Length: 313
Ligand SMILES: NC(=O)CC[C@H](N)C(=O)O
Image 1 (cartoon, rainbow, N blue to C red):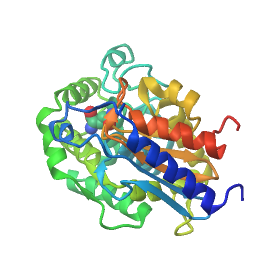
Image 2: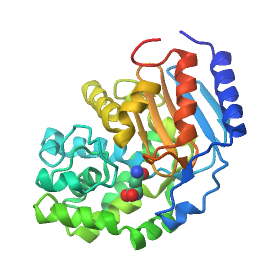
Image 3: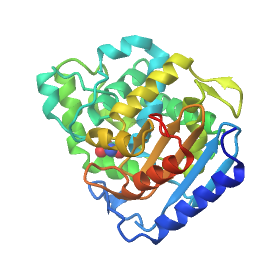
């Protein structure tokens, strides 16, 4: 064991205190009206290590909109349903473009660069939807998260989903454009409805860190001992999180933090220290690439302190 419970708790407590005091907080996403109302002064951090010890700091139990972090779980589900055939619909290269960019889609004939940009996640959602009613597909995604976190209280924030459904014209454009290339099988409104709703799932840092544990432990959730996916698949999902999890900020995140991670415009980040810990951080203010400003800074401080970067201490 490389750290004691007291060391981890102290690190998390001190980082949370430091982040609370900072005045540079980034800007809350305002293109989804419901998210624009979130108080930017909040900050939460939860680490669950390999032994199952939980270190929590700040607003660790406040639910927030997981947004694009849901894309990790929809990717996991879709790979479970169709296996490597998924890669016919979506690539796995970093995009170097903003999360909602449409430009690459034309050149690449409607096949999105990776499953973590919006277009890619919409294509993955379409795969999960096939053969189901939208309500069933959504229920499947939600139950998967409840199962991973061992917490049936996780719900969808309907106000956030409705807010995005009303204003998500750019996502509608992406979906229609992919549909024109035959990349989506289902009616665009159904696919988008499921997509908006899984983005609107609300979770706390504590729940999110618990849900991510299988990625840190070769596909097995140590809380239940159950194998969620194979070790190889967990490793590959982590690789895509490292290279694509922060859009065109992925290189900088790897440089500064050195962990596979996935951000969302709600200000959350799920990060995975393989073999060591599952980490969830949340601070609603975003940087220019749409990633949590203080979340990234907190993760950088944590990995440095614990020696957890996958690239060395
Ligand atoms: N980066 C994100 O979290 C984007 C997700 C958001 N639901 C959108 O589609 O715009």
